[in-house]
Structures are given as structure tokens and as C-alpha cells.
Figure 1 (spheres, one colour):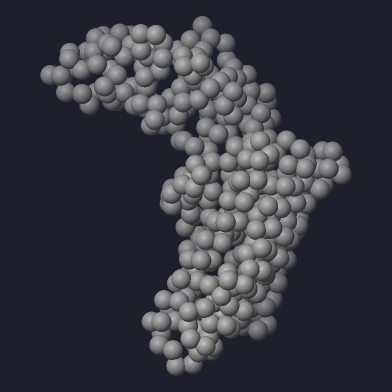
Figure 2: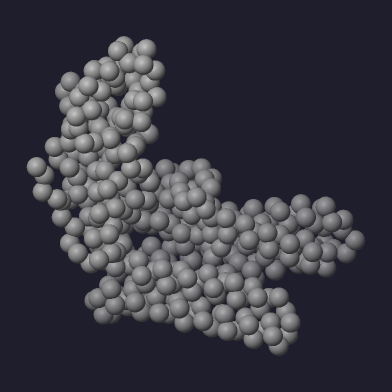
Length: 381
């Protein structure tokens, strides 16, 4: 998770997080329900009751976003792709996939799964009552408006421009028609930029002509969409190149290892002559035990360094990334942020350490991909 997101837990092994911007849409929805919808539908209802019901509706709305993204993720898994993280944000959410869909059909199925779930939820009677009910006679009006809100959001999400789902569908169709994924991605990205410009221009016009703050809300959405579409166009070539890279392509195959049975003091006598700050810790039979850094060793009191073994102070594989050589690089980038001088990725083949990937190796791969250069494993001395 990035610093701008906060974790919400896991579902079926998928990490769920929320970007701070999702609080804007949840807060706005609760405000509109509590100050307009419920008081108009049930005059005389006390404000605390209106706000309580509005808060429940906002939570259910966020839950519907989560269901939407889970359908994307589960469909991706059915198509043979990995899906390990979902982030909710201002425009809905994003199911982050380490790998790009391999065919236009897979891309279409993944893109359409979320909107299909939203349409199904919007048409489910009980769902509509939950979204709008709970405030006396205003419940039926709230349900109707909530259903329209869900359908309106679903319709907006199907507009043909990335990062909206409609843009993903457009990209998949264009990919099928043209046979060129890069061209299809540019078509969808340009559509997103055009849509953002229309929203910003239309929002400014509404605000200047009518004085309605709804116009400013359109400007905010358009602004977010503009930056998201631009980032899609800029990052897409690099993401496509990175999706083809595996740990085996960038790992160091003969790393200097730290024997887990060595004492801290015994290993320090060797480490002082080596140009490294982090080391993979291995057992007698070559199995990875963890990762240890000079910083960790420095925190061991001098009085206990001759009796403390490396295997007892290293970071265990449960707390550091470890995977087989065929692991996609995007999976590593999506799950962990490696700190120079503190972390390593352990590449494990049939239970034995096959190599390591350092933070510098990841940075090098990302920069070469951004330059459009082929990523090769550097020659080892």
C-alpha cells in the first residue's frame, strides 16, 4: 500500500485498501442523504437519525464498490491472472493485476465483470431498500434515489475512456479489431482525456451560469480523470514491458550468503570485508532462512554477539518477499517496497535459494522499461 492508502483487510487472499480520496465520495453521499433526501422524504425526522441512516448508506455504497472490484479480481483469476490487491478511491476502485490480460477476450471479460455486478446490484430490490431505507417514510424515496445513483454511477463508469471500465472495454474491443494492444491502449487513453476535458468544461459552465456547486463537483471528477488518463498513457508502455519480466531475468544467481548457524560476531568478521549491506541467510542444505542487514546486526548488543546466531535475528521469509524464479516482477512491485540496505527478494527454486533481487535491481528494471530498453540480467563476476 502507498502512504496515501490505508488497509482494510483481506478477502480470499486479496488485500483491500482505500485511498484517502474515497472519503470524499462517501462523505458527499452521506451529506446529501442526511441534509436533502431524508429530510425531504420524512419531514420532522430528527437530524441524528438522518445522519445515522446516511452513514449506513455510505458504508453500503462503499461495500458495493468493493463487490464491483472483487468481481474484476475473481474474473481475472478465472482467466489465469493473479489478483492480489484492491484499492478503493474517488472514482470507484482498482483491482490491481500484476500481469496484463493475454488476449482481447480475457481483457473484455475482466473489464465487463465489475459493471455487470453493479448493474445486478442496482436491480436487486433488497439492495435498493437497504441503500435508501431506515428513515420512516423517507425510506422509499431514498431507495429510489439510491437506485438511480447506482445506475447513474454504473452508466458513467461505462463511458469509453480509461481509467473507467468503459475505457477498458473499449481497449479490449479495439485490441480485437486492430490486433495492436498498444494502439488500443492509446485509443482508450485519448478517450479518457477527452471525457475529462468535457467534464471540466461542462462543470465550469454549470457553475458560472447557474452558480450550482454541482458544477465544481464535475470539475473535480474531470480533474482526477484527466490525471488518471494521462498516467495510464505514460505508464502503459512501461507496465507492458514490466509485465513480461520475471525474477529469473534480473536476479543475482550467486549471492554471497550468510550461514544461519554463524554467530553475529563470527559473521561480522567476514562482512567487514564484503561490499554488501544485506545478505540472504541460508541453512546447512541451502534453504533460505531469511534476510539480514548490517543495520539489524548493529542492534544486537555487543555482549551477546558471540552467542546470538544469525538465524535468530534475520527477517524471516514470512516478512520478506520470497518466490520462485518465474514470479512476475509486477507482483513484487505490487506487494512490497524494498528499502536499500535493508531488504532483499529471495528467489527460491525447489526449496533452495536460487538467487536474490536487491532494491537496485528492481529500480534498474523499472528505469530500463521506461526507456524502452530490453531488461537483461547484468553479467556477474
